Image (tube, rainbow, N blue to C red; front, side, top):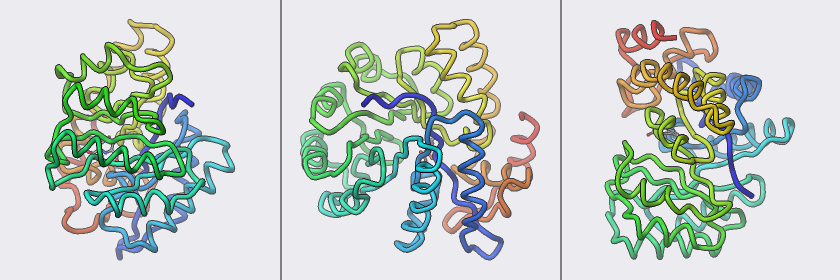
Length: 288
Ligand SMILES: O=C(O)C1=N[C@H](C(=O)O)C[C@H](O)C1
């Protein structure tokens, strides 16, 4: 299985009192699929997963599983932490309900490159579903060098990377020059999705696609169709929007835009996130 296309990491809509708005979540899930997304990502960073309780996480996942089954589309679900044992348990809990698990490089602990390979070897060996390694050094505090990327890509049951390194760096260039056949590279930095697709990424997981699903779907399609001029134009046209949506910590601006559009009931986010400022929200709305 090669994962390709646009996967939307859904926000978790809240009511003004902080309760999860499950009906709005289900509506949003259908609406991004109607807008051209290939599949969904449940419980990613954009979902504010770290501030959901275990019960809320399982109810959010249940909504996403139901929608993806109804629509017959792939579902990726976030699972894992900076504890290998806890990550093994979290991925096991997903069972076979998802297409793949998205597991972040262990954050905060700053393990060695060999430790990271050992972590994912253990996880991939026990996971009931294929794994996607989430490489996001600006959140985890630890980068992956080219050799580590090659080693991870060769581990059985690891089928892809969500690659979000804040640019196109040396390790990215080395990795993209020899991606194993069938291995998925999913662009995870909204601003660099277009250049990574140009280098051969199989798809994208971009939070901005909660707001601009059709535009991101068209961007992925254009690069995959080899229509360079159209793809570049699409990429350029998304720069102002993605910059505006990430002007404050993700997903606060995205939620404020969705709330202003009436797509979700409230711009509420849980502490330690604060709601987007009016100026950030208005700037994003102006770029739509
Ligand atoms: O939740 C996600 O998946 C994403 N999170 C990233 C982040 O918040 O750092 C951004 C990316 O668009 C997808």
